[in-house]
Structure formats: structure tokens, C-alpha cells
Length: 114
Length: 108
Image (cartoon, rainbow over all chains, first blue to last red; front, top):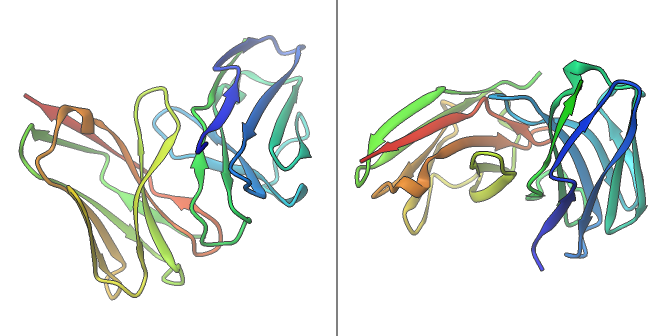
């Protein structure tokens, strides 16, 4: 299995809602990532978990809260988002989180905040 | 910070070769990558090159690396309509940093 699975594929939420994005991989990878991608822009790194510990937080606002329950699962909890948070949220994984590792991406969750 | 630049758009005819270019500023990467993103999808790793190589060929794909000029290119031979996508180069100088992306349009 070489897939990274993200759910849901699409999400529409209001600014007062609480929702969660989910990501799962069964490649035995020990590093997982959240990226945010606005239309016609490259992905921007948000968070990195390595061996289930948060290793990088790219100064992301606290309305985004990551969680890594185990090495196969990664969640992104969303609360009180703003319309400008609308974007494609991509999850990725890599074997160990080293600097030069190849990343495997999921298909993303297209988020719209109304 | 690291800058990775690409031209925004490239249009080629089906069957022709496509060349997508990338320039970067930080030369400490061990690997440089090319990713492909189709509409509404995630990023797919296409190919990569080790930083001490000049060229790598992988079926229809050829990667050229000029370390002196900090220039990377991806050549797609016999371009097909299924190659229409956005192509991102990426380096790993400090973390995976993506280029600005080149949208490849393949016309019949």
C-alpha cells in the first residue's frame, strides 16, 4: 500500500464550526506533514510530526490544531476559521522525517470557509 | 529565505518535447525533486536527481542539473495530453521547498 488517504475530500464550514481533517498511511512511515495550498500557489508547510512528536510548526495560527494519535494517523482540528483559510489541505508522509526524504502526498481536502 | 522560481506557463503540441525550468538559490540540497499535480489532486513524485549528478533519465523524463548556475530542468519527451498538469520543482536545503509551479498545457 503506497497511498496516503485523506478524508473528507471536500468540506464546507462556517466560521463558528469545529471540524477535523483526517489522514492515514500504512507504509510504515514515521513522519507526517500538513501542507496548505492556495489556488495557483505552491504548497506551504504547516506542521511536521516525526515519530509521533510535533517537530515543526511553521507559526500556524492556533485555530489549526494538529494531532498524531499514532504513526499511521494524522488529524488537523479546525476551529473558528476565517474565509482566508479556504484552501486545499494536503497531508504527506515520509519514512523518517529526514531533510532529504521523498514525500508521498494524499489527494487533499478542499476546504471552504463561509 | 530560499527562493525556487519557475516560469508560470508552458504550452506544447502533443508529441513534442516539453522543457520545464527551475532556478533555486540554496545549493546545499542533497536531492532535487520534480512533482506533478493534476487538477483537484495531490502531488505525485515524478522523479528526482542527486545533487552530485548532472543528468538523470527515467523513461520519457530527463532531468538536467547545473549546480554552478543553480538551474534544474525537466524534459518530457513525446508529450501526451495526460501530461497536462502543474509541475513543481522542490529542493530540500532546509525543508522541502516548492517552486512556484509551471502549468503545462498540451494541445492537439
